[in-house]
Length: 451
Ligand code: SF4
Ligand code: SF4
Image 1 (tube, protein in one colour):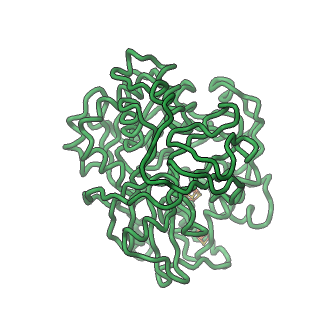
Image 2 (cartoon, rainbow, N blue to C red):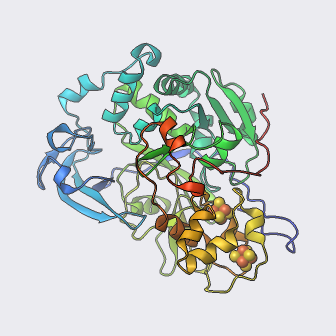
Image 3 (tube, protein in one colour):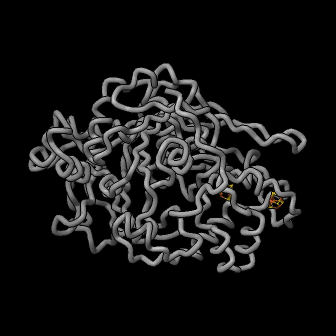
């Protein structure tokens, strides 16, 4: 997928996979596991053994939506390990094959023909009922909206494929996002290899970008096509000014709301070696269902990596469920696994040179390694976008992304007081490491608008 540097002179150029791949389908698995952060078994209003229907809100007393994405019988309700090491609520459902939905859901999710006429509150309410998480981000007053046909990692093609395959839903998706965010002119970010497909897009300003990593990372898109910084939640605070939504997700939103359906399936790019195949799978299906469809098995000593070799994570078990944020899995054989070493930094400076947010990576890595978290904070560790480029170029094979992440977790002491975007930007509880400021200081100018 990429090139290492040439005798240390040229930085690596990691190209995105750009081949078109028809999207196949994975059969309904025997069980699905639905996961929710910030919820516990006490929040669930159904019991083990009880039957549930697709789209049913499983929350106790109809509270915050915990939407069932399958029809069947509840097998387990428990706390399970989340990929970030924390715990999350997991509800296991033994599926009954055909989807049946509660009668009341038909009325609640009555299809919307024109999103603009339905209005913002109606669209946001229905997205929540349809099972989309992070819907509140749409209403937080972003200054700019970027719809991305670039994928965030080099071996994913789900957003590119959505641009090729879903021209009929594109206008609907744009109208929905305009209504939900109140932003009149969104940007469509398109990889240069698909500029012809992007040129037909209406209702958006098109920006063509080289299909080179890390151009598709949301933080980079906020900089190159948006108003500067990515809108996100940090603890209880909201920081940034640009909302970035992948095209595959935008189209899924439009399909669900115009069809009166809940979000049950998503596309995942599956790769082994450099071959990439897109598969539509039930959200909550075990990752092993994707492997079975590819005719692959997890090898002893190998890894299955979720969301990209550069910025993803190795899954702890192939029973781990596919989530709505999973865009890709990559099967790595034991011989391809990259071994990190506990080697000393030689101060070659390659990591600092390549860091897209201009961090002093070698120093922050050492601060994190030796527990000097105050120094990590002042050096701006919170600004790391976890792109993985530093670790990719490090000749000492230091686990730099892990050190950055460790430093970020240990310094995550955001005040948690700011509630609105304006308050968050003025909050300054993080001091110099606030993710809302300093990001991209001294970095190159944004990409040119090609239209
Ligand atoms: S992972 Fe973080 S520190 Fe490393 S290059 Fe990317 S942004 Fe910079
Ligand atoms: S951390 Fe690695 S890339 Fe960075 S200066 Fe040290 S040896 Fe070089």
